[in-house]
Structure formats: structure tokens, C-alpha cells
Length: 86
Image 1 (cartoon, helix red, strand yellow):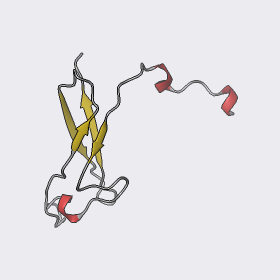
Image 2 (cartoon, helix red, strand yellow):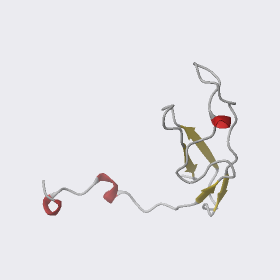
Image 3 (cartoon, helix red, strand yellow):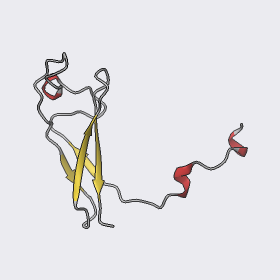
Image 4 (cartoon, one colour):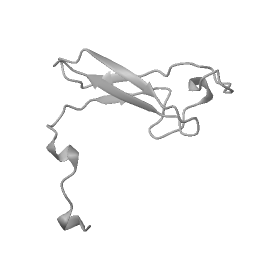
């Protein structure tokens, strides 16, 4: 299927959403987490520490945030999701 006759992607139908910035003193952009943030169970010997995270620029109606850690040991990363009011 060529680009010109491909159906629109699902995300094309979603409304625009607010964005915000997440920064960390412990995690570099695109970098692998250090041993401090690796779990200390199931054969891993990390320090099991949560990284420092800061949020800014989020919508005033935001009620909370959730940090969802990766479960792939070879590609540890942090994914952050903001939860607004509905």
C-alpha cells in the first residue's frame, strides 16, 4: 500500500491533548537507567530506587501522574502519563 492510498491512522481521529515536560536529575534523555533504578529481585541486583522526576507545564486541571516502568530488563526506560479531569 502506498502512502497516498493508505487509510488514516487511528490517532488522526483523536482530539488534541495538552502536553507537559518531564525532567529528571537521575535520567538522561534517551539514556539507559543506572543500576540505582534497577529492581533488586528476580535475579537482578539493582538498588531498587525510584528516579527523581519533575513535571512542569501541565494543565491546571491535572489531578495526578503515574510512572510506568519498563518490564524489559534490556531496555529500561521511564514512561510518564498525566491524568487530567474528565
